[in-house]
Image 1 (cartoon, rainbow, N blue to C red):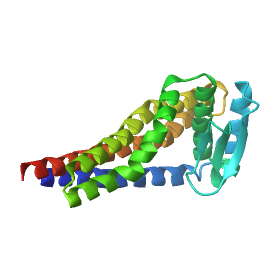
Image 2 (image 1 turned 90 degrees about the horizontal axis):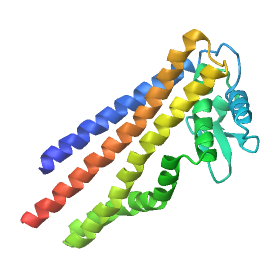
Image 3 (image 1 turned 180 degrees about the horizontal axis):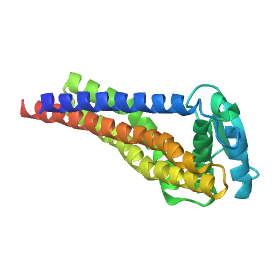
Length: 226
């Protein structure tokens, strides 16, 4: 079982690398394509926010690449510096996606609230879970290792709840762009490609966590049988 779980982890890891590579390639490709309206990511985000009455939500640049996110505590859509200032099709799609999260927050979207409630447990599980598993197995303290496994389960649960949040934000983004006329007829499918590959990274993250849990569980079962 240990070998099978390890092989599964390896396959999931390779699949995750492939998805990340495809996302980066797709993003790089469409970062060179100027959208038909010639609007920057910041301009698109501001326009969609204002159209939904969210004039209090700020649009801010943040250093790095693909660091775009919505901060529900600060009420700010933060776009990576390239997307903030770029009039590319990729910047437009990403900006609309992050505004999707802001609209979810304003409307009290249930899955967003559930994800926020799971964040403390997921952070603890991500940082402490693997350590406890390794220490527990090394010391022969299976109870400690089991505790680490349970903590890591919170990570997978958080990632599972993240899926509807991200898919819904992408659905909203495409709807915003279509209804507000930001996309030319031939651009809708291209924007969907960018958002689809981005969403698949969350699927890969969940698969990776589940494979890790299976591996940890197989190690615990092996120790019990000794």
